[in-house]
Image (cartoon, rainbow, N blue to C red; front, top):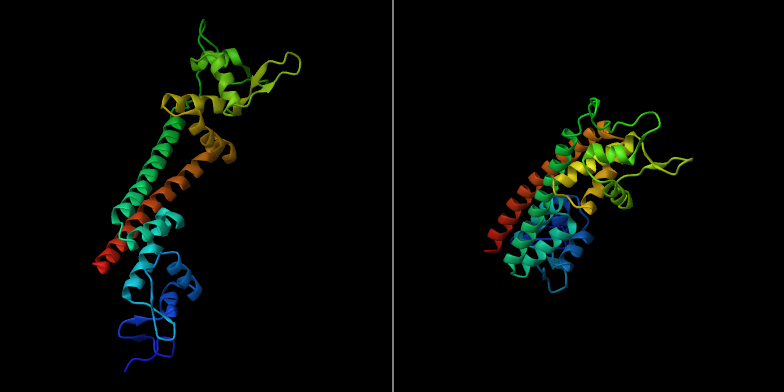
Length: 252
C-alpha cells in the first residue's frame, strides 16, 4: 500500500516527491517549486493535504530543461519549456531554430576573424617607386602611407578612428596622426573584415578581443578557446534536443 508522498516512502504509484526530482540533479526542493511556478515543469498534482506530487512526466521535463540550458542558456531554455507545456510546440521549435541560427552566426564570425588573421601577412618592403610598407618605424607611420598601403582613403581611416576601431596617437609637434604597431594591426584587421562584408559595429567587439588578448599571437589561444566553446555549445544543443524529444514522447 502506497505511503504519503511527503512521508518516508519515496514513490507511490509512480508519484514522486519534490525531493526525488531534486536529488537526482543536485538541486534544492525550492528550485523544483520555482521551476514549476515558472512554467518550466507542468503543474503538479496536490494531495488532500496540499503537498505537491510529481510524475515521470515532470522528471522528463526537468531533464529536458537542464539539458537545454548549456546550449541555449537559461532564459531561452525556460521559454522553450513553457512553450511545450502550453501546447505551443511550433513556438518551441522556433526558439530552438533561433539558437541554432545564432550559433551559426557565431561560427561565421569566428571564421571571418581567422580568415582575416591569415591574411595579415607582414607587409613586404616596398620596391623603388612603390608606396612604403605600412609597417611603423620607431616613431610610427602617418595616415597617408598607411592609407595608401591598404588601398583606402585617409578619410576611411579617420572614420574607423571615430568608430573606435583604430587608435592613432598624435605627434606632439605637428598634431599629425601617428599609427604605431598596434594601430596598424587594428587597421589591417578592420580592412580585412570590411572586405569580408562586416559592418563597423560588428567589427568593434572583434578588435576589442585582439586588444584584450594583447595582440594577434596571444589571440590564437583565445580563438582556440572560442572555437572549443562553440563546439561544446553545438554538442550541448544535440543533447538538449534528444532530451526534449524524449519529453515530447512522454507528453504524447
